[in-house]
Amino acid sequence: DTEGNFAAVPEDTGNGGDNSQHGDGGDESENYTVASTYAILFPWFTQLMGVFIYYLLSRHLPSLPYAAIVFLLGFSIGYTTTSASRDATTQSASIWLQINGQLILLIFLPGLIFLDSITTNVFLFFQAFWQLVTFAFPMVMGGTFLTALVAMYVFPYGWSFNLCMTFGAILSGTDPVAVSGILNALGAPPRLKMHISGESLLNDGSAVVFYNIFSSRFYNELGIPDFGSDIGWGEGFLLFLRLCFGGVAIGLAFGMGTVFILYLLRRRLSSEENVMQVVTTICSAYLTYFVADTLSQCSGIVAVLVCGIIVRVFGETMVNDLLLTFHFWEVAGQCLNTLLFVLGGCLWGNIISDNRFSGEEDGLFTATDWGYLFILFFCLIVIRFILVFAFYPITARLGIGTSIKEAVFMSYGGLRGAVGIALALTLNATIYDQTDGSDEAHLEYIKFRDDTARLFGMSGGISLLTLLVNGVTAGPLLRWLGLVTPKIARMKVIENYKHQMVQNALLSYIELLSQERFKDLDYSVIREHVPFLRDISRDRLMAAVRRVQDTKHSVTAPRLDHILPYFYE
Image (cartoon, rainbow, N blue to C red):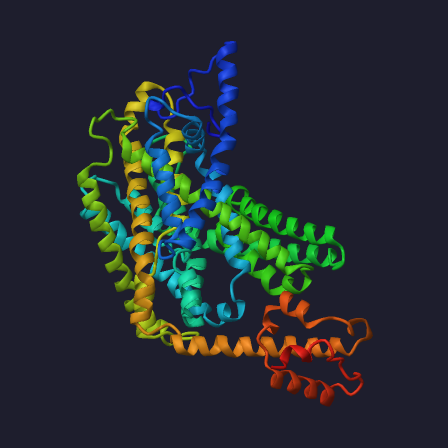
């Protein structure tokens, strides 16, 4: 199905999703319809399981990253999709595993990128812009090339240069999803948080640009008419500029258009217009990506990024209900991340469990491949350290600067995540779509299918390892480097905040007691419903009364008949 529609689940998935068995017979048509309806099960089943996983992790295993565990959930589903007896869940998963590659990007990336854009700290973002550009373009290009060298000269698979560069582009993007919670919980410096989140925001765009260039060159190797292009280096540079600056132009246009619509829908007391503003942002995110990527052949990620930044800078004051907007996008981001990681884990488990195409009894992913996966994991950490410290003399002098300790943490905390999973899924799905035909074509393209399946196995394994190893140990490393707010200082800040909160609540309470309608309100009721006022002393109460009388001359004396008896011995 090359148009991005869901295919029905075949009775035997050994043909890699070949749907040729669907004829004109009534029984086959009925089976096709029933099987197609199973597509609705997988996304909502994964969301429900995500809720249970979150509950268990938040209550009992807070050190484990959520993304890694839902990836393992997908792995467990995918591992069983090749078994003889398949239940409704694995059948539904099989349908999702056959989605067109372009559709995968259209489903996941616009929402995830727009969420990151509208929630970024724009002040620090522009302060650190040139640092982030350095992280995003020269470092991503360097990471792509060095990773490609590992794939070409360390791996024994005989991958072409273009496939190796595509692999490098997939693994060059970083994802802060596993460390952002740790940074916030431990009180990491805002500069470090901006470096990690801002780098991810920009290098996702550059990674996809490099992926588009080198994957097109790889597709051309298949020899299929109108599939891929033999892009030269000069043409590739011009294509890079077109993808980037074309995406910027489209993002600016859609961003300003979105701001104008938000301005028109500015009736702040209308709940319907509040909802319509949220609908506007949804349409803007997905239409921006579609127009840039599909219609204009530019970078959809760069376009959505620019659109989101424009909306954040110029449209935030025009949003009637900021909480509604941000909460919606947080929910959307949670659902998209969960589904993407489960889908990635599902394909990873499906690839590792058995070779569906070449018929090897030992499967596609062997013990030797596991060894190379761990070698790749070590090499990627080394490459990350090399790149961060190679550019450290530049980044330390640009924007908001950085430090050696922050550079060490950035090197270790550069995790692989959502965008890499989406790109690897897309590459694998695109090759399967384009080579799904006769038996002769099936045999001719078997190596390309095996190569992209093994590439996804490596990409998925790296995402899992970085989430489990780097994500779990990021907190202790942050403490060891001394980049967290000391516990005593944090507790002092919390104590001062609590003191001010109680003081403000007490002053408001005293002011209300001066009103006639509250003259008979008993303190026991207040103490039951306002926890902050349960443990105040009589001296603090009287000090608050004097302060209200000194500052609020128009306020009559508060009635204390129903509160003072509770403070007597």
